[in-house]
Amino acid sequence: MVPTEGMAFPTYDDAYNFYQRYACHAGFDIKKSRMHKAFREVCCTREGKHVSKVNNGDRQWRRPSKKMGCKAYVKLRHNYDGGALSSVVYDVVEL
Image 1 (cartoon, one colour):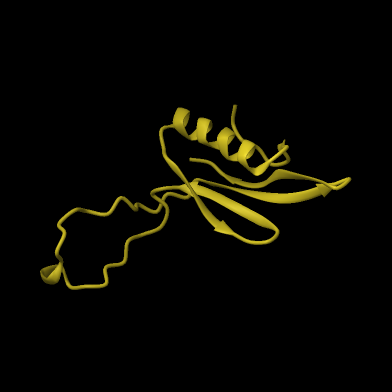
Image 2 (image 1 turned 90 degrees about the vertical axis):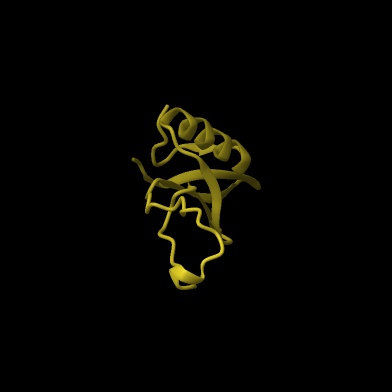
């Protein structure tokens, strides 16, 4: 099942586990990313680009970065319905 806008989950952990199963099936890993009072983001571990803080000659590790600029993520908004907290998907970027 593919995540779509408007999907509701009873808890944030349920939403995270759903996206984790989807990511495993789609072939990428995820991580918990930005958190705000109103929402949380879960994104691909290869999100962003690596910016080196040292010159290449001064580098101690020769291991390349995993970051490739992947844009796959899901943004979850917290809703309070009748005093119960639920998480609703309101933004999805697919591969």
